[in-house]
Length: 545
Image (cartoon, rainbow, N blue to C red):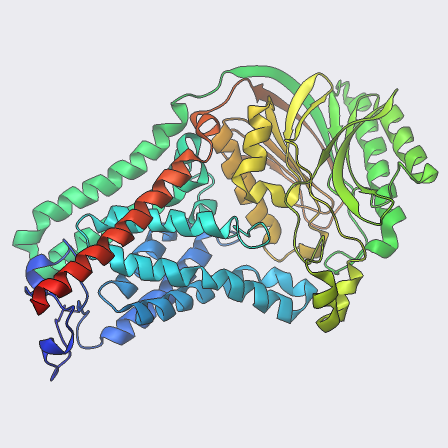
């Protein structure tokens, strides 16, 4: 590939925004409007945009080719640099669709239309990002500005609409890689920035050599490669900065009770069986602990371990009471709590063997169309199967710092873990061990459980403490503070496990800074776009003058 200013036979004057100096002389310093990737410019751009989405997909679980993350950012930049806004938009859509359609394929449990609608909604965010990248690439230092735009895109996608859907962040492919360390300094936003910046620097180095020749380009290309290497190496030492001291050691049990008919949309018809499976798991765990001479401090159960409200159903309460009495320690039991108006809370409840139910955490981020139906009257008119979600869940509002068995846990239920705030606020409130109760029964063997585990692993690095995922049907796991997995259960099988974990005592830098790094980086990216627009207008005015 060689760069060209215009297509063969075109006159430069056709485009009033075209650069007034040869592109080659400015190669890899800026990529202005009119920059071309040779004779087959459009073909290269289409291939690069598609490759960007596929590279990001393969970087994420269950594929876990994490090193493709920087390549994904570089390919999208290559695809849109120097092109007009309309073309940048549809190239961004192509990249987003190549990622999102296969990434959230597990949503087809609710129907192919629901899956494709969610994928399309997620793809939309890539249009303005691609347009912004095309603009920011016209500025010197474009690897920095374009990386910041990835953060801006993910920040908006994690908040709007309906509370956001941050699945598939660049950061979520890096749970125990050199990039993961940045999570301890600036949460998932700084990880995404580091990954995209590395990709931009690699592309900058390649273009410097390809477009200016080895003799002129190699010295500065070497500097760019050194900078990329420094980004990677700094990530490996980042967790040591402000690492929280070790706290108490806790022996906890985990129960994965399994459910009937895993992978089906609804298991509501087997609610009592699900409850009994998890109660049986507590009895099995208690017997194993006694046989090993292990003194448990607490036992963790997953989200929806009881879809029958034990506050309203005496039989369900009796079942849980018996399990707690056998364990002899407090249980953290996931359950639905129903209100008089038919709504419900998705909760984790501390259940003491002597005093019964105590502290409660209510899930804060609920799954639209799964746990509640927004604009129910409207959507159920067109998609009748949504009526299977018979009651709307109500989000909680308080952090999940829960004291149980003398230990404070940082609890976030299932979907909560994909968002920065719930776990961060629970840790800031004193949680020394991250606990993620979840119900993935609808998604076994689809990759969704692997993706959620990867997010949990990044949260462990972010807050410098171990994490536990406890699921109805897998994957349940114990994660070390460095993001590595110490134990992982099989999927779609009953499982119990005992783990000894050391809690962390205090916050990391990322916990203290909160959303500030994300806001700063997003602002940098948007400011670069604004600057590019202003400079472009001034350039047109100067040419016309």
